[in-house]
Image (cartoon, rainbow, N blue to C red):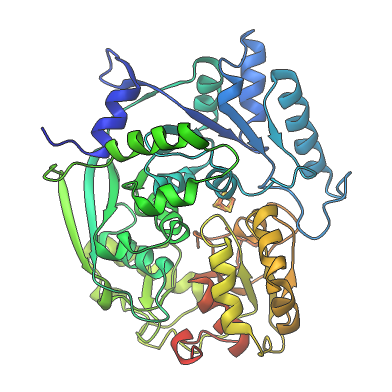
Length: 467
Ligand code: SF4
């Protein structure tokens, strides 16, 4: 019988089926950070319980950490307090922490894959909704709430309902200037922000198979923005090559054995899905969001849509979005002035993201009046980028070169929009208030498109700046 990767991992990690119909699922890897873990540690302590598998638990500091200076104690007392809490909790429960002096600190969804902790065929839990990112390596990765973080601490298990499975096939070749971010924004635009509720997404097709691991991470990262809690790509040679020699990946003969097992976990030919969607890669263009959720996007050459043309169920939210953004239906999105350019986040702050933006910025300057910052996803990304001189390209263009963290993706540290500022952002959410100002406006796009907008001072078509 032909099985999917979802079938195989689910079966391999099922402890038992609960009376509720949910599955008690063993979690192979638990990733934690400073924001969603303190309360869970507190509940664990109150219950007099220990962390069941500290060797399967790893911590980093990302959400609230400052990115201008990371010298302790931080001037932000809340950031300092949360960091100190995490350090203490990790010491008390014997959990490895990738702290600021480790050389391995960074956004939890960037460091998991780059350290080789994220591997095919495993289950992963993390108290952050973008945990779906890790599915790029062929894992089932769940974003979980604080009480579930406690449950995983105490039992290494989750009680969870098995989702249905939708395969999204993207076939053909992407045109120049079109990136993985444009693919996932297109998928969310077509299927809707709630289209994936109750589903896991399997991304497949020749365009996905041709993607690098970093591009696959971008796609899987935003599964949750389309309503799917899980998203994955089947493990293949790209996956195995990516994992080879990573610090926590199996080494030597164990690696060879692991590759054999990883291969066996991929979806079998002829396996069936609850639903299949097809996309032509060549039909995808550089995308920009115009509204207040990641599904409200258009191609850069297209006009902002008119709520009168929306499906009945979308009409009110489109009108609300236009009113919040102060945008006019029918006018082109290209040419929209920006105040801030942000390259960062667990969606698009890996080395290839910085390379694609630097290729656009080389020899050019950020427009007057635009505040531009680039925040590498991890210390390792920063180091690799610096070794290629990318930091100099960014600085010469007029970008601030920051230290690793979530930064302006959610504005939990000092990096925030001011008032009604408009930000061209490589992050994943454009919700009202997401970037730290309740009235700030976020336009999501690829890092190369952010670079193009930073130079022009307005939304521009990156294809016109590429050789
Ligand atoms: S970069 Fe943004 S989306 Fe990613 S983990 Fe941090 S806050 Fe969450």
